[in-house]
Amino acid sequence: MHSKTWIWVGLAAVLLLVAANLAIFAAFPPGHQHVQEPLKRVNWMMPSGPGFEYRSSYESPVIVYDRMNETWHLKNATAWNRTIFLGDRYSLDPAHPEGIRYTPDIAVEGDVVSLDFFVRNLAGEDCAHADLTVTTGTASLNAVTGSPEGDILPGATTTLPINNLAAGEWREVWVTTDLPRPGPEEVLYLTISLTAPYTLTTPDGTPVDFDFQRMSGVISGPVPTGGDAIDPGYVPDPDYNRAHLPGGSATFIVVGIDAPELVPPPTFPTIRAE
Image 1 (cartoon, rainbow, N blue to C red):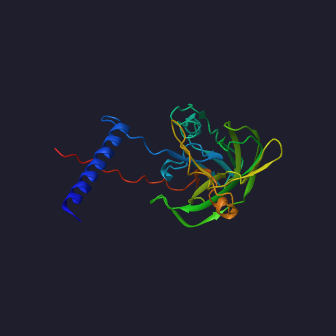
Image 2: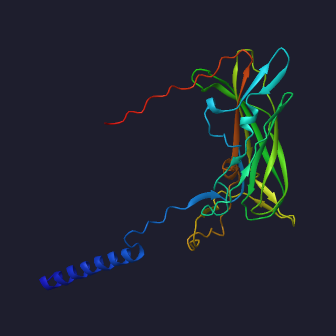
Image 3: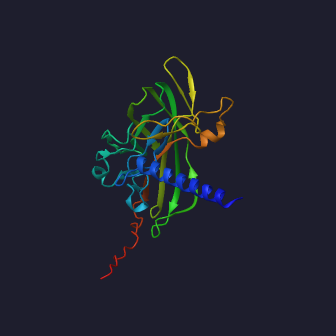
C-alpha cells in the first residue's frame, strides 16, 4: 500500500473518532448525569410482608408461649402495629412515589397469629379471582448466634383467595397461621410466606398464567422499543415460572416463657483517621 493511501486511512480514522466524540457530547453534555439503569420488577401480583421480612432475628417480633397455661402473647404489640410507609417499592412509577402506607395489624388469639400482608396487582390485567399460597416454616434458633439450627420444618400449605383486584389496585389481605409450642427454654424461628398466584382469572373468565420471562423495566421517561418482543413460538415452562413467583414473608421469634433473651451481636466502635 502506497504512503498516500496510509495517510488517507489515518485521516479517515481521525475523522471517525472526532465524529464519535461529538455525538457523545451532544447526547451527554458536560454536567449532564447519565440515566441510571431502570428498576426491574415482574409485572404480576406483588405480595409484601409487613416491613420486617429482611430483619435479623434480634429485630423480629417476639411471641412468648406459656406452656403451663397454654397461652401465647406478642411482646410490644403496639410497636409492631405502627403504620408502615412502603416508599416507592410498589408505586406504578417509582419516579413519582404514591406514598402507600398500611398497618400489619398483628394479632395473637389463642394458638393462632394473624397479620395483614400487602398485595398489589401489577399484572396489567383486572383480577376477578386468584389464589395466593401461604406457607410456614419453623426452625430452632440459637439464642447466642441468632441463627437457625437444624432443618426447617415446613407447616401446612394453604391458599388465600383474592377477588376483584383491578389492575394497579392494592389491598391488605389477612393471613392466619397456627403457632408452634416451644419448650420452656426453647427458641423457635417462625416464617410466614405469601406467594403470588400462578394463574389469575380476568372478569370475562380468561385465565392468565404467570410468565417470568416477561420481565419489564420500570423507568421514568419513554419506554424503549424494539428487541423486547417474545418469540411467537416461545412456550413458558410452568415449573420454572412457579419457582420464580413473587412473594413476601414475615418472621417471628416464638419462645418458651423461660427461654434466654436473644443476645444482640456486638457493636464495634467506628475508627476514624485523625
